[in-house]
Length: 210
Image 1 (cartoon, helix red, strand yellow):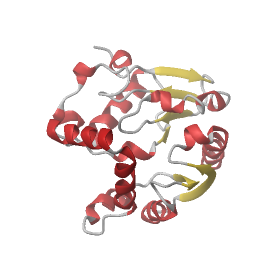
Image 2 (tube, helix red, strand yellow):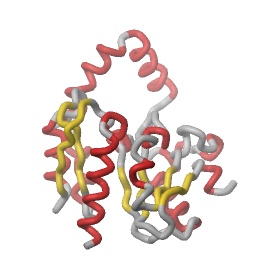
Image 3 (tube, rainbow, N blue to C red):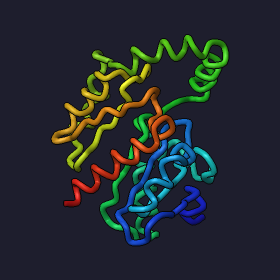
């Protein structure tokens, strides 16, 4: 099985340009970036992937050992970049939900789907304070301190799931990172405000490369 079919790889945009890899979050696929990609193609080589287990990826490549942490997904993307002979230092654009670490059992998923089906508004309301913070589980934020690459934290100004404190918390944990607040509503700025999202990415990459 080749990596292109395994991860439904799509390469588009300006050949030889800086490489941008828009990552999708848990439960989504590369289609989440469909409104932003045309705006990035003018300046970047855009590498789109479906993480194993999502979208049109090869589901037979999924395994609990490899996919229970982000390391397996990271190895997949690095392998794809190597096969495509792309620049060694691509810019990764992370979807808010990519922090999912795996570990759901079949029973967990059944319970989650049942809860969503029975009362999706109630589920959303219950999730907001959870995403805001888990003071009893400080390990959830420890990995951010290990990030050493230039980082842009982009957040919608009106996001019912992740309020401003979330973006500021992430920024404060990543040394030297920059926080930009987009004039957008909701939790998916790549859909709600594609032009502003693309402009933030383009401006940040340009500043880092200077």
